[in-house]
Amino acid sequence: MTATEETPADTSSSARRLPGLRRQALDLRPLAIPEFRRLAVGQGTAFIGSMLTQTAVPVQVYALSHSSLAVGLVGLVGLVPIICFGLYGGAIADAVDRRRLYLWSSVGTLLVTFGLLAQAVLTADSVPLILALVFVQSALFAVSSSTRGAIVPRIVPKELVAAANTFSFTLSNVGQVLGPIIAGLLLVHHNGFAYAYAADALLFTAALYSAFQLPDLAPKGHSPRPGLRSIAEGLAFIVKRPVLLTSFGMDIAAMVLANPRSLYPAIADARYDGLVGPLYAAIAIGAVLAGAASGWIGRVRRQGVALTAAIVLWGASVALAGLVGSLWLTVALLAVAGAADLVSSVFRQTILQTYAPDQLRGRMQGVFIVVVTGGPRLGDLRAGGVAAATSVSFAWASGGVACIAVAVVIGFCSRSFWRYDAGLPAPAQPADEATC
Image (cartoon, rainbow, N blue to C red):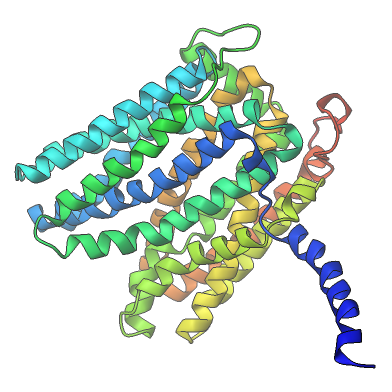
Protein backbone atom coordinates (compact mmCIF):
# COMPACT_ATOMS: atom_id res chain seq x y z
CA MET A 1 0.00 0.00 0.00
CA THR A 2 1.40 3.40 -0.95
CA ALA A 3 1.64 6.50 1.23
CA THR A 4 -1.05 8.10 -0.89
CA GLU A 5 -3.42 5.22 -0.17
CA GLU A 6 -2.79 5.51 3.57
CA THR A 7 -3.60 9.22 3.78
CA PRO A 8 -7.42 8.93 3.90
CA ALA A 9 -7.22 6.49 6.81
CA ASP A 10 -4.83 8.79 8.71
CA THR A 11 -7.07 11.78 8.07
CA SER A 12 -10.11 9.84 9.25
CA SER A 13 -8.30 8.87 12.44
CA SER A 14 -7.39 12.50 13.13
CA ALA A 15 -10.95 13.56 12.49
CA ARG A 16 -12.18 10.99 15.00
CA ARG A 17 -9.75 12.25 17.63
CA LEU A 18 -10.50 15.96 17.09
CA PRO A 19 -14.08 15.99 18.52
CA GLY A 20 -12.75 14.31 21.66
CA LEU A 21 -10.10 17.00 22.03
CA ARG A 22 -12.69 19.71 21.51
CA ARG A 23 -14.87 18.19 24.24
CA GLN A 24 -11.98 18.46 26.69
CA ALA A 25 -10.90 21.98 25.71
CA LEU A 26 -12.28 25.15 27.28
CA ASP A 27 -16.00 25.34 26.45
CA LEU A 28 -16.51 28.48 24.38
CA ARG A 29 -20.23 28.10 23.72
CA PRO A 30 -21.20 30.91 26.13
CA LEU A 31 -19.22 33.32 23.92
CA ALA A 32 -21.91 32.89 21.25
CA ILE A 33 -24.13 34.99 23.55
CA PRO A 34 -23.18 38.62 22.73
CA GLU A 35 -24.04 39.99 26.18
CA PHE A 36 -21.92 37.42 27.98
CA ARG A 37 -19.08 37.75 25.47
CA ARG A 38 -18.83 41.48 26.06
CA LEU A 39 -19.23 41.08 29.83
CA ALA A 40 -16.57 38.37 30.15
CA VAL A 41 -14.00 39.88 27.81
CA GLY A 42 -14.52 43.35 29.29
CA GLN A 43 -14.14 42.09 32.82
CA GLY A 44 -11.15 39.92 31.91
CA THR A 45 -9.40 42.92 30.38
CA ALA A 46 -10.28 45.11 33.34
CA PHE A 47 -9.00 42.47 35.76
CA ILE A 48 -5.51 42.75 34.29
CA GLY A 49 -5.68 46.47 35.00
CA SER A 50 -6.94 45.91 38.54
CA MET A 51 -3.95 43.64 39.18
CA LEU A 52 -1.69 46.50 38.09
CA THR A 53 -3.25 48.69 40.76
CA GLN A 54 -3.23 45.92 43.39
CA THR A 55 0.49 45.55 42.76
CA ALA A 56 1.30 49.26 42.54
CA VAL A 57 -0.59 50.44 45.64
CA PRO A 58 1.35 48.45 48.30
CA VAL A 59 4.63 49.22 46.54
CA GLN A 60 3.85 52.94 46.54
CA VAL A 61 2.71 52.87 50.16
CA TYR A 62 5.96 51.21 51.19
CA ALA A 63 8.00 53.65 49.09
CA LEU A 64 6.33 56.56 50.91
CA SER A 65 6.24 55.12 54.45
CA HIS A 66 9.02 52.50 54.57
CA SER A 67 6.63 50.65 56.91
CA SER A 68 5.38 47.09 56.52
CA LEU A 69 2.58 48.00 58.94
CA ALA A 70 1.35 50.64 56.51
CA VAL A 71 1.40 48.05 53.72
CA GLY A 72 -0.62 45.71 55.95
CA LEU A 73 -3.19 48.46 56.42
CA VAL A 74 -3.83 48.40 52.67
CA GLY A 75 -5.26 44.89 53.01
CA LEU A 76 -7.29 45.77 56.10
CA VAL A 77 -8.67 48.98 54.59
CA GLY A 78 -9.66 47.02 51.49
CA LEU A 79 -11.29 44.16 53.40
CA VAL A 80 -13.69 46.13 55.62
CA PRO A 81 -15.72 47.75 52.79
CA ILE A 82 -15.83 44.48 50.86
CA ILE A 83 -17.54 42.79 53.82
CA CYS A 84 -20.00 45.64 54.38
CA PHE A 85 -20.73 46.60 50.79
CA GLY A 86 -20.59 43.04 49.50
CA LEU A 87 -23.62 42.18 51.61
CA TYR A 88 -25.42 45.49 51.09
CA GLY A 89 -24.51 45.67 47.40
CA GLY A 90 -26.03 42.23 46.88
CA ALA A 91 -29.23 43.42 48.54
CA ILE A 92 -29.33 46.45 46.24
CA ALA A 93 -28.74 44.19 43.21
CA ASP A 94 -31.94 42.31 44.06
CA ALA A 95 -33.94 45.52 44.31
CA VAL A 96 -32.93 47.59 41.27
CA ASP A 97 -32.05 47.19 37.61
CA ARG A 98 -28.77 45.26 37.70
CA ARG A 99 -27.48 46.80 34.50
CA ARG A 100 -27.73 50.32 35.94
CA LEU A 101 -26.18 49.30 39.26
CA TYR A 102 -23.28 47.55 37.50
CA LEU A 103 -22.80 50.54 35.20
CA TRP A 104 -22.72 53.16 37.96
CA SER A 105 -20.49 51.10 40.25
CA SER A 106 -18.11 50.64 37.29
CA VAL A 107 -18.11 54.38 36.60
CA GLY A 108 -17.29 55.01 40.26
CA THR A 109 -14.44 52.50 40.16
CA LEU A 110 -12.97 54.24 37.11
CA LEU A 111 -13.17 57.64 38.85
CA VAL A 112 -11.27 56.25 41.85
CA THR A 113 -8.59 54.91 39.51
CA PHE A 114 -8.29 58.41 38.06
CA GLY A 115 -7.88 59.63 41.64
CA LEU A 116 -4.96 57.24 42.17
CA LEU A 117 -3.48 58.42 38.89
CA ALA A 118 -3.86 62.07 39.88
CA GLN A 119 -2.14 61.64 43.26
CA ALA A 120 0.75 59.88 41.54
CA VAL A 121 1.12 62.53 38.81
CA LEU A 122 0.87 65.39 41.32
CA THR A 123 3.24 63.58 43.76
CA ALA A 124 0.82 64.09 46.64
CA ASP A 125 2.92 61.63 48.68
CA SER A 126 0.05 60.95 51.09
CA VAL A 127 -0.48 57.46 52.46
CA PRO A 128 -3.82 58.42 54.11
CA LEU A 129 -5.08 59.65 50.73
CA ILE A 130 -4.12 56.37 49.05
CA LEU A 131 -5.80 54.37 51.82
CA ALA A 132 -8.97 56.45 51.48
CA LEU A 133 -9.06 55.81 47.73
CA VAL A 134 -8.49 52.07 48.32
CA PHE A 135 -11.43 52.06 50.77
CA VAL A 136 -13.80 53.62 48.23
CA GLN A 137 -12.51 51.44 45.40
CA SER A 138 -13.03 48.27 47.45
CA ALA A 139 -16.59 49.28 48.30
CA LEU A 140 -17.40 49.84 44.62
CA PHE A 141 -15.68 46.57 43.69
CA ALA A 142 -17.88 44.71 46.18
CA VAL A 143 -21.05 46.19 44.69
CA SER A 144 -20.04 45.60 41.07
CA SER A 145 -18.85 42.04 41.74
CA SER A 146 -22.07 41.08 43.55
CA THR A 147 -24.09 42.54 40.72
CA ARG A 148 -22.05 40.93 37.94
CA GLY A 149 -22.39 37.48 39.52
CA ALA A 150 -26.17 37.92 39.67
CA ILE A 151 -26.26 39.06 36.02
CA VAL A 152 -24.69 35.92 34.51
CA PRO A 153 -27.66 33.54 35.12
CA ARG A 154 -29.98 36.15 33.56
CA ILE A 155 -28.10 36.26 30.26
CA VAL A 156 -26.81 32.67 30.02
CA PRO A 157 -28.98 29.50 29.84
CA LYS A 158 -28.75 27.27 32.91
CA GLU A 159 -26.97 24.48 31.02
CA LEU A 160 -24.15 26.91 30.08
CA VAL A 161 -23.68 28.63 33.44
CA ALA A 162 -20.86 26.29 34.49
CA ALA A 163 -19.07 26.84 31.16
CA ALA A 164 -19.55 30.61 31.50
CA ASN A 165 -18.08 30.61 35.00
CA THR A 166 -15.16 28.46 33.87
CA PHE A 167 -14.33 30.92 31.11
CA SER A 168 -14.57 33.89 33.48
CA PHE A 169 -12.43 32.29 36.19
CA THR A 170 -9.83 31.26 33.61
CA LEU A 171 -9.61 34.84 32.33
CA SER A 172 -9.21 36.16 35.88
CA ASN A 173 -6.33 33.76 36.49
CA VAL A 174 -4.69 34.90 33.27
CA GLY A 175 -4.95 38.41 34.72
CA GLN A 176 -3.33 37.26 37.96
CA VAL A 177 -0.36 36.05 35.94
CA LEU A 178 -0.07 38.96 33.48
CA GLY A 179 -1.00 41.86 35.78
CA PRO A 180 1.92 41.63 38.23
CA ILE A 181 4.36 40.99 35.36
CA ILE A 182 3.24 44.12 33.53
CA ALA A 183 3.24 46.09 36.78
CA GLY A 184 6.81 44.98 37.46
CA LEU A 185 7.89 46.29 34.06
CA LEU A 186 6.14 49.63 34.60
CA LEU A 187 7.16 50.30 38.19
CA VAL A 188 10.89 50.30 37.43
CA HIS A 189 10.46 53.52 35.43
CA HIS A 190 10.34 57.06 36.76
CA ASN A 191 6.66 57.84 37.45
CA GLY A 192 6.02 54.09 37.24
CA PHE A 193 3.08 54.36 39.64
CA ALA A 194 1.38 56.81 37.32
CA TYR A 195 1.97 54.47 34.37
CA ALA A 196 0.41 51.56 36.27
CA TYR A 197 -2.69 53.52 37.30
CA ALA A 198 -3.06 54.97 33.78
CA ALA A 199 -2.88 51.49 32.27
CA ASP A 200 -5.53 50.30 34.75
CA ALA A 201 -7.83 53.17 33.77
CA LEU A 202 -7.34 52.44 30.08
CA LEU A 203 -8.01 48.72 30.44
CA PHE A 204 -11.04 49.35 32.65
CA THR A 205 -12.87 51.11 29.83
CA ALA A 206 -13.51 47.62 28.39
CA ALA A 207 -15.60 46.75 31.47
CA LEU A 208 -17.41 50.06 31.21
CA TYR A 209 -18.25 49.40 27.56
CA SER A 210 -19.61 45.94 28.38
CA ALA A 211 -21.85 47.46 31.07
CA PHE A 212 -23.26 49.97 28.59
CA GLN A 213 -24.12 47.13 26.19
CA LEU A 214 -26.08 45.01 28.65
CA PRO A 215 -29.87 44.81 28.29
CA ASP A 216 -32.17 46.15 30.99
CA LEU A 217 -32.18 43.73 33.94
CA ALA A 218 -35.03 44.88 36.15
CA PRO A 219 -35.93 42.68 39.16
CA LYS A 220 -38.25 39.74 38.54
CA GLY A 221 -41.34 39.57 40.70
CA HIS A 222 -41.26 41.12 44.18
CA SER A 223 -38.50 43.70 44.63
CA PRO A 224 -37.28 43.72 48.26
CA ARG A 225 -36.27 46.97 49.85
CA PRO A 226 -32.49 46.87 50.46
CA GLY A 227 -31.50 47.01 54.10
CA LEU A 228 -30.68 44.87 57.11
CA ARG A 229 -33.94 42.92 56.82
CA SER A 230 -33.22 42.10 53.19
CA ILE A 231 -29.68 40.97 54.04
CA ALA A 232 -31.01 38.83 56.91
CA GLU A 233 -33.48 37.16 54.52
CA GLY A 234 -30.60 36.24 52.22
CA LEU A 235 -28.51 34.82 55.08
CA ALA A 236 -31.50 32.85 56.37
CA PHE A 237 -32.02 31.36 52.92
CA ILE A 238 -28.44 30.03 53.00
CA VAL A 239 -28.64 28.70 56.56
CA LYS A 240 -31.85 26.76 55.82
CA ARG A 241 -30.44 25.09 52.70
CA PRO A 242 -27.61 22.63 53.36
CA VAL A 243 -26.63 22.58 49.67
CA LEU A 244 -25.66 26.25 49.81
CA LEU A 245 -24.38 26.18 53.38
CA THR A 246 -22.12 23.22 52.60
CA SER A 247 -20.71 24.86 49.49
CA PHE A 248 -19.76 27.92 51.54
CA GLY A 249 -18.31 25.66 54.23
CA MET A 250 -16.14 23.98 51.60
CA ASP A 251 -14.83 27.35 50.45
CA ILE A 252 -14.02 28.47 53.98
CA ALA A 253 -12.24 25.18 54.72
CA ALA A 254 -10.12 25.50 51.58
CA MET A 255 -9.14 29.13 52.01
CA VAL A 256 -8.78 29.41 55.80
CA LEU A 257 -7.15 26.06 56.48
CA ALA A 258 -5.06 25.37 53.37
CA ASN A 259 -4.09 28.70 51.84
CA PRO A 260 -0.24 28.78 51.99
CA ARG A 261 0.21 32.27 50.50
CA SER A 262 1.51 34.00 53.61
CA LEU A 263 4.17 31.28 54.05
CA TYR A 264 5.79 31.77 50.63
CA PRO A 265 8.45 34.28 51.75
CA ALA A 266 9.53 32.16 54.72
CA ILE A 267 9.64 28.87 52.82
CA ALA A 268 11.52 30.50 49.93
CA ASP A 269 14.06 31.98 52.35
CA ALA A 270 14.55 28.66 54.16
CA ARG A 271 14.68 26.31 51.17
CA TYR A 272 14.97 28.11 47.84
CA ASP A 273 17.49 30.94 48.34
CA GLY A 274 14.72 33.52 48.47
CA LEU A 275 13.28 32.61 45.04
CA VAL A 276 9.64 33.41 45.79
CA GLY A 277 8.24 34.49 42.40
CA PRO A 278 7.47 30.98 41.10
CA LEU A 279 5.55 30.17 44.28
CA TYR A 280 3.26 33.19 43.88
CA ALA A 281 2.63 32.39 40.20
CA ALA A 282 2.14 28.61 40.49
CA ILE A 283 -1.51 28.44 41.59
CA ALA A 284 -2.68 30.92 38.95
CA ILE A 285 -0.73 29.11 36.21
CA GLY A 286 -2.27 25.78 37.27
CA ALA A 287 -5.74 27.33 37.13
CA VAL A 288 -5.12 28.68 33.62
CA LEU A 289 -3.93 25.27 32.40
CA ALA A 290 -6.97 23.62 33.98
CA GLY A 291 -9.22 26.16 32.31
CA ALA A 292 -7.72 25.33 28.93
CA ALA A 293 -8.75 21.67 29.44
CA SER A 294 -12.06 22.28 31.20
CA GLY A 295 -14.61 21.16 28.62
CA TRP A 296 -15.71 18.33 30.91
CA ILE A 297 -16.78 20.65 33.74
CA GLY A 298 -20.04 21.71 32.12
CA ARG A 299 -21.07 18.05 31.67
CA VAL A 300 -20.82 17.19 35.38
CA ARG A 301 -24.22 16.79 37.03
CA ARG A 302 -23.19 15.59 40.51
CA GLN A 303 -21.62 18.92 41.33
CA GLY A 304 -21.59 18.38 45.10
CA VAL A 305 -19.48 15.23 44.71
CA ALA A 306 -17.19 16.96 42.20
CA LEU A 307 -16.77 19.99 44.47
CA THR A 308 -15.80 17.77 47.42
CA ALA A 309 -13.28 15.89 45.28
CA ALA A 310 -11.75 19.17 44.06
CA ILE A 311 -11.37 20.48 47.63
CA VAL A 312 -9.73 17.20 48.72
CA LEU A 313 -7.30 17.43 45.79
CA TRP A 314 -6.55 21.06 46.70
CA GLY A 315 -5.78 20.11 50.32
CA ALA A 316 -3.67 17.10 49.36
CA SER A 317 -1.63 19.07 46.80
CA VAL A 318 -0.99 21.89 49.26
CA ALA A 319 0.01 19.47 52.03
CA LEU A 320 2.50 17.66 49.78
CA ALA A 321 3.89 20.94 48.47
CA GLY A 322 4.80 21.90 52.02
CA LEU A 323 6.81 18.72 52.54
CA VAL A 324 8.91 18.36 49.38
CA GLY A 325 12.36 19.89 49.10
CA SER A 326 12.54 20.67 45.37
CA LEU A 327 11.38 24.13 44.27
CA TRP A 328 10.02 22.94 40.95
CA LEU A 329 8.22 19.98 42.52
CA THR A 330 6.66 22.42 44.98
CA VAL A 331 5.62 24.66 42.08
CA ALA A 332 4.18 21.66 40.21
CA LEU A 333 2.12 20.61 43.23
CA LEU A 334 0.88 24.17 43.73
CA ALA A 335 -0.11 24.20 40.06
CA VAL A 336 -2.16 21.06 40.67
CA ALA A 337 -3.72 22.83 43.64
CA GLY A 338 -4.51 25.78 41.37
CA ALA A 339 -6.23 23.47 38.89
CA ALA A 340 -8.32 22.00 41.71
CA ASP A 341 -9.12 25.51 42.95
CA LEU A 342 -10.45 26.53 39.53
CA VAL A 343 -12.71 23.49 39.42
CA SER A 344 -14.02 24.04 42.96
CA SER A 345 -14.56 27.77 42.29
CA VAL A 346 -16.62 27.02 39.18
CA PHE A 347 -18.83 24.49 40.95
CA ARG A 348 -19.33 26.72 44.01
CA GLN A 349 -20.34 29.67 41.87
CA THR A 350 -22.52 27.56 39.57
CA ILE A 351 -24.39 25.90 42.44
CA LEU A 352 -24.98 29.30 44.00
CA GLN A 353 -26.22 30.90 40.78
CA THR A 354 -28.53 28.08 39.72
CA TYR A 355 -29.85 26.86 43.08
CA ALA A 356 -31.05 30.23 44.38
CA PRO A 357 -34.01 32.02 42.76
CA ASP A 358 -33.28 35.16 40.77
CA GLN A 359 -34.74 37.51 43.39
CA LEU A 360 -32.06 36.30 45.86
CA ARG A 361 -29.07 36.00 43.56
CA GLY A 362 -27.67 39.44 44.33
CA ARG A 363 -27.59 38.70 48.05
CA MET A 364 -26.13 35.24 47.41
CA GLN A 365 -23.35 36.82 45.36
CA GLY A 366 -22.77 39.38 48.11
CA VAL A 367 -22.12 36.57 50.61
CA PHE A 368 -19.95 34.83 48.01
CA ILE A 369 -17.78 37.95 47.59
CA VAL A 370 -17.35 38.27 51.36
CA VAL A 371 -16.33 34.62 51.73
CA VAL A 372 -13.92 34.44 48.78
CA THR A 373 -12.32 37.75 49.79
CA GLY A 374 -12.22 37.31 53.54
CA GLY A 375 -11.33 33.60 53.56
CA PRO A 376 -7.81 33.98 52.13
CA ARG A 377 -7.04 36.83 54.55
CA LEU A 378 -8.12 34.70 57.51
CA GLY A 379 -6.02 31.93 55.99
CA ASP A 380 -3.01 34.23 55.99
CA LEU A 381 -3.59 34.91 59.69
CA ARG A 382 -4.02 31.20 60.52
CA ALA A 383 -0.90 30.14 58.62
CA GLY A 384 1.21 32.90 60.12
CA GLY A 385 0.03 32.18 63.65
CA VAL A 386 0.61 28.42 63.41
CA ALA A 387 4.04 28.98 61.81
CA ALA A 388 5.02 31.31 64.66
CA ALA A 389 3.93 28.74 67.25
CA THR A 390 5.40 25.66 65.51
CA SER A 391 7.21 25.75 62.16
CA VAL A 392 6.58 26.88 58.61
CA SER A 393 6.53 23.31 57.28
CA PHE A 394 4.01 22.19 59.91
CA ALA A 395 1.77 25.21 59.33
CA TRP A 396 1.80 24.56 55.59
CA ALA A 397 1.26 20.77 55.56
CA SER A 398 -1.12 20.55 58.52
CA GLY A 399 -3.42 23.10 56.90
CA GLY A 400 -3.81 20.91 53.82
CA VAL A 401 -4.54 17.82 55.94
CA ALA A 402 -7.09 19.74 58.05
CA CYS A 403 -8.77 20.97 54.86
CA ILE A 404 -9.20 17.39 53.61
CA ALA A 405 -10.67 16.23 56.92
CA VAL A 406 -13.16 19.11 57.18
CA ALA A 407 -14.22 18.85 53.54
CA VAL A 408 -14.91 15.11 53.79
CA VAL A 409 -16.87 15.47 57.03
CA ILE A 410 -19.10 18.36 55.97
CA GLY A 411 -19.55 16.89 52.49
CA PHE A 412 -20.86 13.58 53.84
CA CYS A 413 -22.90 15.28 56.55
CA SER A 414 -25.07 17.07 53.98
CA ARG A 415 -27.03 14.35 52.22
CA SER A 416 -28.72 16.78 49.83
CA PHE A 417 -25.36 18.35 48.89
CA TRP A 418 -23.82 14.93 48.22
CA ARG A 419 -26.79 13.96 45.99
CA TYR A 420 -27.20 17.36 44.33
CA ASP A 421 -27.85 16.93 40.58
CA ALA A 422 -27.38 19.99 38.37
CA GLY A 423 -29.44 18.37 35.64
CA LEU A 424 -32.62 18.34 37.72
CA PRO A 425 -34.98 21.31 38.22
CA ALA A 426 -35.13 22.73 41.74
CA PRO A 427 -38.40 20.97 42.75
CA ALA A 428 -36.91 17.57 41.82
CA GLN A 429 -33.70 17.99 43.84
CA PRO A 430 -33.13 15.82 46.94
CA ALA A 431 -34.78 17.31 50.00
CA ASP A 432 -32.64 19.78 51.93
CA GLU A 433 -31.40 17.77 54.89
CA ALA A 434 -28.25 17.20 56.91
CA THR A 435 -27.22 14.01 58.68
CA CYS A 436 -24.73 15.49 61.15
